[in-house]
Figure 1 (cartoon, helix red, strand yellow):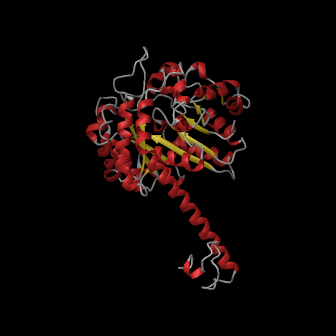
Figure 2: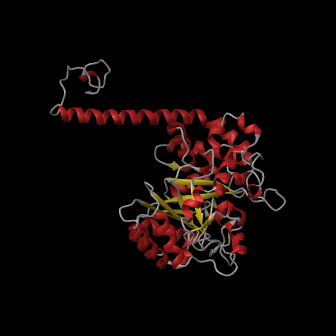
Figure 3: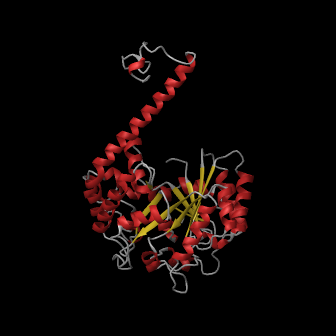
Length: 409
């Protein structure tokens, strides 16, 4: 098991200033009835213990609930501890937020320390406000736009995260163009909403496999003319899988071991969708808490459970792109890993429609890499040759042509 991992941190756990109807994390309040905010002691211990592990790069993403309810001073302390314990180390920072509590001071801070910010927007106001309401029942879109403008004004790198529910799943082109044109974003994430009730039935605001597949096909068609300007995380990950022959996101990995979740009290879990007592791996205050959690038997068993997919998956031509899909999409709390993903039919619709074009794009990426490598080699050879080649000399690229008829054109 790779010993490089990132942290997903919930400093305020379930706490949020909004009350989005579909939020699965608000239900976690029952696990923290008395206190749900991270103390300075736990913050310091978490950062020092994580940065003490030998890794090439460290990644910390703050999420919720709503992480900004902790206040800016909390994050200033985190920077202080990162500087103290991470001298000479490469630390990447991210924040996932609803954007409603951002101020200009927040914007300057996020820019200064190079945070990548994900901001949740579920489409135009009439769609966004259907589910994303504040505690008083009022839509949050206007406040989110104010926060987004603060990020833009301060030059904070950010992307738009859109959760797809029954409310917006049939609006692929409209939402894509809204994110691109109105929100002026070239970096998008589109996430499926799949949640089960206590009886194992899909909740009424969640999408079916067929809806998901149709949405992705329509999204692909809207995006394809912009494929060199707009980044959609899922599409980027498919290209990465085709070019690098490995996964860079959970859903495409054969096992679940890319990050650890840290709750407000320091408890460690394998995934935020599985923040349940039975999946607790340890605590940051434990001796070697992180490495014991990451390499322990409980984590190994959880990671490998993804491979216990349905028998039909083994015969599927698209297996390498989903490996049975996320465990949480198969059954409530992942209790039946052998169940077909609720999105299975949708993934098949999508890949059948788009995979040939993705393969063409992958070839383009590979060719661009070769061309760039050749350009760098030629530049190095020119420098070694004193600044150039004879026009009638053989081209150093090995084509057999004269330089003037090949790379020297």
